[in-house]
Image (cartoon, rainbow over all chains, first blue to last red; front, side, top):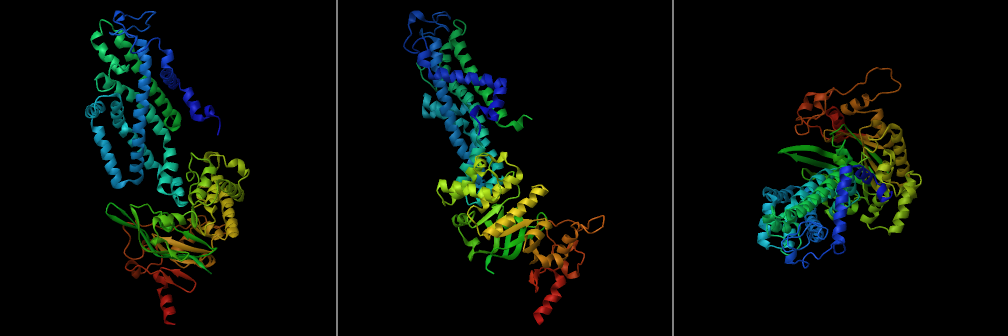
Length: 282
Length: 329
């Protein structure tokens, strides 16, 4: 066991320029989210005044102000907190449920497999944003419900990835060897199969955080996610819609934040896939 | 001699797309304590399925043990619950697999995998288990055992990994060790080392071994008795000396003729003509009939029974007369 940064896959990841860009974006985002109160020049909600409304970017308000006179930079900085929270919680939810489904379906096969995978097929048959809209309309519009909805929508991607790795792993001789020393199903699943499927799960998780943030922003934009005055990036775009010509900065900067964040997670996810599974690249 | 294992009329069938495939069909043999039994046959003859049946590890579906008895230390393994069976696996009966490259989990160190055996069977404290693990690694000839415990499988060569597998298999001092082609994936010099090690440990621990192989050289070197299998059925079961000196079943004769000999000047080997039959579509009579050079009319019609001769058991119509004489006298 070498030091963490001496591991082969870390070395491969750091050699990949796109992945490093993604990693930097993700680290910046996390840093911003953690230190938001320190970094933001104004309070994202309270520091508005109508005299200040729709000011173009200036030295006082670097990214301008919105129609209630609130500082857009501060709102974006605090919005990073919400986005990271959405990404981590909804993906975490999807990862746990999807992985358990995939493990069970792949390992036991047969009837259980058919049932679980047909559920996955049904979820996949809906366009993801439409399904998320349906779920939030049932649960009621709020940020928490948006996270649950986005989580449910992403369960199938984890279930499928995990199931396919389990299908190949369970035929491996070390699994049979574990059974031959008397290990039970639980031990085999969680000690032998799961640790060997971590690479695809990590890759899928990273990529999905970007999608989750995008989906949640979409829900907020439609009024089903974060409610005003929460500084959520998607919700910020709603107000900006009718001001696109008059005050383009109100829409431009939250949009840019969403785009960069999703790009960052996707680049990092791609890089991780190449780094964790070098066979794919050759 | 005390019998440690007795397999009687074992039948393991596989069912796929409505077809019944008789992978093991009526296998009978016994194994004494401290004895090494070789099971030989070509690919698909049912050797591995026999061993998996003893471990009750036949993948199901599609496989199923449909009949017979496996008496191990006085108990019929086929009557045990899955939970009781798990207690036997690894502790009373353990197994070594063919390919040491894939039989160790790549994400765990050797230590974690060796300790798993003790953990599963809740035998020892962590400290004692570690000491035992080091002792085992030393025993199977791995230098610097303390240091090597922290290594991952990919840092070991094939021969070393097979040594680790042997250490794992012997960890709880099982009464029976099943080795499924333990040297097939290794190169020749390593093969000899591994076989020597197994023989040495077998003497020391008094473990009974079932050696599954298609290498008659391994059988001659290692085993006390041999079971020859063909198309899922036993064809000849005898003492290793008897079998090599005086093979009786046409298939055994064919097998022995197809090995090259150092003292012979012949240029070409004598293979057995034809290929093994499709297990889903066996001939009505003897499965070896189409390839047999001693075939008679009866062979295409009636399956020969696996019957006892004075010095062996055999399933062949050629010896039916001998059997009848023996019965008459």
